[in-house]
Amino acid sequence: MAKMGNNGGNRKNKSRQIKKSLFAQSGQKGGFNSMQVEPGMQGIMAFCSMNKEKQAVAELRNILGEFAEQLYGREHTSDESTINDSIADEESQDVADMLDQELKQLKSEREGKEEQFRWRKTNIDCMVFLQTHHPIDPSDFVYRVLTDLQNKKIKRTRYTIRVHPVQETCRAYMDDIKQLAQRLLSPYFHKEGLSPVRWACEPRIRWNDKIKKDELIIEIANVVGQNHVVNLKQPELTVVIDIFKNICAMAVVRDYPGLKKYNLEKIFEAEQETIKAQQGDDAPKSQEHDGKSVDDPVQEIDNSDKAGKRKVDAVDAKRETESSAPIKKTKV
Image (cartoon, rainbow, N blue to C red; front, side, top):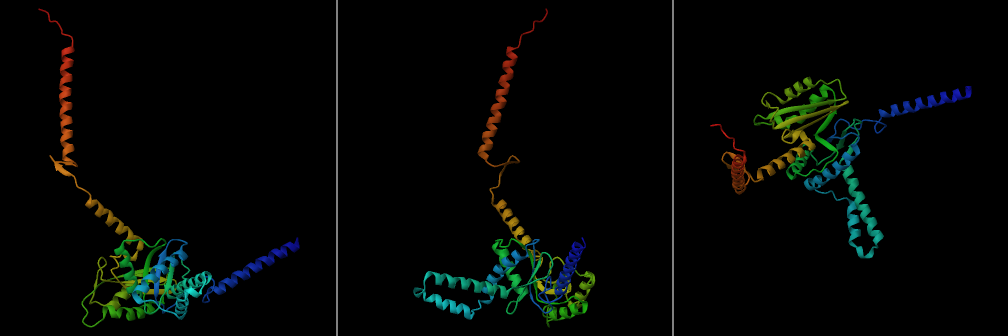
């Protein structure tokens, strides 16, 4: 019995050691459950369905990679040029070699997208961060992508709900946030000769109890200055701030309300409602006849004839009933 007890104790000690090891790794870069988003990064933050982070990253990379190629051009790597040169001499290759080259090209393109939009773990459910680099400007890039999706009225995402551009990140301390705001907001609000701008602030705070939302808005307003006008319903520019754990992500975006606060689901739902409304307006309207809605005037006349016939039949039936009734004799 003592031997069994010792084995049980050894298993418990081993379990504790494993937990301690994992906990120690959690604070290291790239370790188990580590935060991979750091100050000084730019990128795109996305919010997705529960337990669908990987699927959201995959579909975002496809869409964003396509738009990045259109807006910024395709980066021609040496590997790709080598592949193209080898494919040009197709006559000297057999089918197996050609398939192998195509697979290499597809792998190269996939790795290029992964490098261009690198997934940085946040370890927060339903939230992913894709790091980007020059020449991509996250704010302008996301605006162009969402505007195009809205105009084409085609839903291309299944797991991604909302996307926020991140022009820069910093530590989630008020002093660091103020410094980032002064640097980031200056080109939008402090240019010489700039007319007053309608603006708003949209902060979201997750897994952080140090930063208070009201205090944050006041600090951002102080940085923007009194020359500009706060307009929460129709702002020209919106300062979007996402604070999660010990990181603050900030960006200045355009048409935030018009693009449904950058919510892909809401954009698509609004477009579907617009299409249904237009289809309803295009449907043939009924004609007015004697104050009543009539779809077909010929049918209305036919209905009135039938109604008149029913009245005549009712009168004839009444007369027949009266004539067939027994005659009562009166006393003289």
